[in-house]
Structures are given as structure tokens and as C-alpha cells.
Image 1 (cartoon, helix red, strand yellow):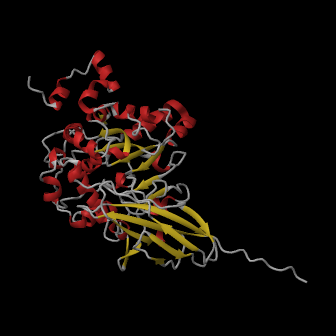
Image 2 (tube, rainbow, N blue to C red):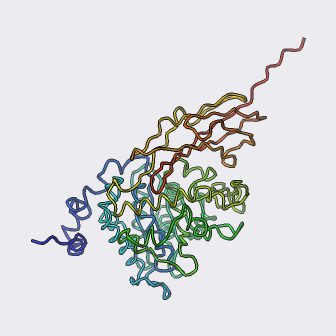
Image 3 (cartoon, helix red, strand yellow):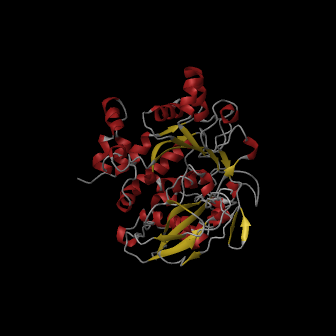
Length: 473
């Protein structure tokens, strides 16, 4: 008997009654895809962030571009849901699917075809049926997006839910705004505050009065699309800064020979690799260098500062208004440019994971600093740094680089690192008039193809010596 393709089996399964209950439990697909992601111990680790994506796929094709990259990193989070907001595909969008939900589901089907190989390279990728269950319409005439948000936020899980809105169709209201309206009406101010406080945003601003008028203010909001400065909106800078970084080639590394998911990456007429919405989840990828609760530290999405026009009411509202001095220039672009080759090489490697066996693809090293990652010293103390515990899953040679990141800390320096290109390094704590912090980034890069980099951050607090005065005679 000839085996039926997995997707044909999926489409043939009735979704009603008792079968629907089995589908919801994930048991039906264990034989096809392995155990459901919810049952996998590694997936429920408290270290993983809970993430919901709201996308207007079917409008600007860059949402579809970002979704390809998002699915390649789906193992890094607990994906609580994907909400498609556009009921009709925009006329100038060339996708053959004519609804937002149809576009997202087509990408999920492609993801399902490469899932077995992805999971060989890095266990923990959620199964296609798991994601399919959690991919819903966020159209105004559908309650599914609202219900998905309510169920995720109300679940007795101590971790907050990170919400990433990539934009909303002009004729559609964000499902999160609708959910917040419903909670406020039905649970009152106290219930509304408890609900809102369980959310964190790396997101566009599509939530009406919930943004800046209704109490309480958001616990944390990173707004990765604005302001206009140093070359335009931050949203429009991702493509120019990353498209060719590290020698990335759109045709060679993505569109050709990398399976059905990469083949669904659309090219746009103005910027072939625009991906303006990718910032929202790049900010959340655990690289060892970033902390989502610290927007000013820097990440693959850049570095963020408080939004001036929202002060003092919203002290935890951040956007892309920071500049780094790097490569001889001072510019906002440098907050991403310094990592651009690393993140594009990582994208290349994950595209390889879709089609290549483990031995023929590259995998990121593990950067490990020996000793405490937070230390307190006095001026002139010698701070020793060791990355001797760093390893590579492919057994490749590693190179090391220790970098002082002055903009991420609160120390004017100078900080001169001895043997900065070696596993063992050191620096002398600077003289400071007040307590200040020094941020040191360890970059560990393998010699694979493409070369992959991971990081660890060491934060050294320098406290000035207390001067002891002799009592007056």
C-alpha cells in the first residue's frame, strides 16, 4: 500500500466531534510528527518566552517574509498563537491565497514538510498541527483571535505573554484591543489591570486608548518601528542593513534548494528583503547577549531607549532612538549593524536545517563565561574573564572576542581589554566618581559554513572606594 503524504492525511481528517477532541489533545499526530509540543518537557521550560503574533499577512508582503523567519525560530519560544487579521488579500499582493488566514496556513503546511528535518537539528520545534490549532482569524466578525488571547493570558502560567502586532488591516481592529475592551467591560478596572499586567509588548501601536490613556500603563512596551531619525523609520532600516550582511544571497541561501518554506518567501519591488516586522521577534531570540526585559542592553533588533513623548506616565515605553559608536561612526544603524552578519548567518544556517542532514549543516556554539555574570569591584581591580568552557556541537574551532559595550552600560571608561581575542582576557576597572556599570560582551564564533556566533554578557558594577577620614583632633 502506497503511503499517503502527511499533508494529505492532515486535510483528510474530519475536525468534528470526538476526533476534534483527540486533535485538541495532540494525540492524533504523535505518530506523524512525534509528541505534541505541549507535552515535551524541553518546550515547557520556564526559560522559554510565551509569544503571540498578530499579522496582517496579505497586505505588504513583508509580513510573509517575516513569517518565514519566525517559523524557523519557533523552537525558541512557546508559541501561544498566530492571529491573521486581514480577511481579504490586498489587490497588489501577488500571493495565490486570498485571505490572511489562508496565507499563514499555506506557510504552516510548508513548515510541516520541513519540520522533521528542523527537529533533527534542534529538538523542540512545535509540530505543524500544534501551530495549526493555534492559528486563527482575527477578523472583526470572528471571535477566535480574542478567545485565543483570553485563554493564553488567563492560563495559570507565571510567565507573561509577549504580544507582537505586525500591523492591522485598516478595516480590522486588533484582536488584542478587542480582548482588552472585553476584559475591561466584563471584569472592571481591577480585573483589567491584572490581565494587562500579564502582557509584554514588542509590537506596533494598534490598541487605541489602551496605549496611553487607560490605567495601568503597560509593564513593558518595546516599539521597534519608529522614530524617524538617522535614515528614516527603524521599520525601513532592517532590509538595507541585513539583506547582504555576511554575504547573504537571496537566491542562493533562501529561494533555491532550501525546501518549500523558503520558497514561499516573497520578494518585494522596493526592498527585496524588507522584513520590517522581524524586529518584533528578533528582540526575543535568546542569543546569550540580550535580555527582553532590558531594552537598552541591545539585541539583534537593535538597542532601545525610553520614548520621550510618553514620559512620565509611561516610563516603560521604549523605541529605537539610541545610537552606538561603532566602526568609526556614531549612528542608530550601528545598534543593529554590529550584529547584522551574525543574524543573517544564523538565518542561512536554519534554512540549511530545512533540507540538510545534521552532519552537513552548521549549528551555533555555546558561549560560556566562567564565574559570575554579574560582579562588583572597586576601581583599579583586575577583572579576569574566561570563556574556556565554551563549546561547539560540531566540534569546530572557535574564535573569541571580548568587547566593551559602553552605550549599554553607565560608565564613561576607558575600559581597555587585554587579550580581547583570546579565551582568557582581563581589564582594569576604571576610576569612577559614582557607582557605574561596565558591560562586556563575549562573542564566540565557530569556523563552520556559514560561521555562527553566540554571546554572553558580563556586567561589572564598579563602586568607588569609600574614603575613611581621620577624626578631627
